[in-house]
Length: 304
Image (cartoon, rainbow, N blue to C red):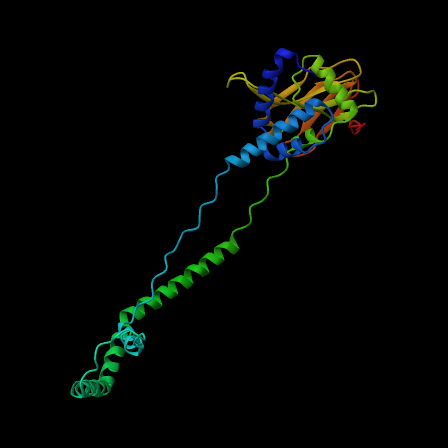
């Protein structure tokens, strides 16, 4: 129903309050439903904004830890050997170099290099044994490494067995309130206008639950009102309606509906209606006509 010009801002705040209390699945269904009225379009836009806000407020995943690599050990003996094999730079043509050494000096240097190679060849077996002894793992290190490997294997085995024994979490059952988010029929839209004109605070719905052959219908809707902690409401309601009369609704809180469902009795023009609806099951309705002790189920809702 259209709002007066001065009530547009309170109506928008009330709509934002309603949208903020819906589940993600309810917001998705409301945002992507096919709108049929300007009010439906405003509710769809508000649902899209709320979904975008929740996605932006979701915490970002933790970054992966950075593991520093351990540098490889440097073998100084190998570096010295590479230094001896490195070629000396050739003199550049046109640039004077120092004079060549006399033959006696060259002979002494060659003798010294020859003696050094002989000592290295003679001491090679001893150095090899010393290096092998130094690089050999100690008994304690071998034992610690073996224990660490066995411990890692045991931990991985226990983790695999625990994961296999733990049952997968069950998905939450669907709520019976999802019936209120299907596309409204023309008859339901006309009933919504009647209820709003009568002063009923209809936020979502109404939707048919059952009807009698005489035209009396059982409707369900949600009423969400913004306010303080004492005055704010978020209710699930049912009421009987016929071609001329809107009877008094029966409401419970949304939390109570999701916990235990709605159980009530309504007095209609054709008899007494016993209603059992939710929290996950479809509505079960029995009608006991006036002057009769037998209860009969009403007809299924006519979705016209």
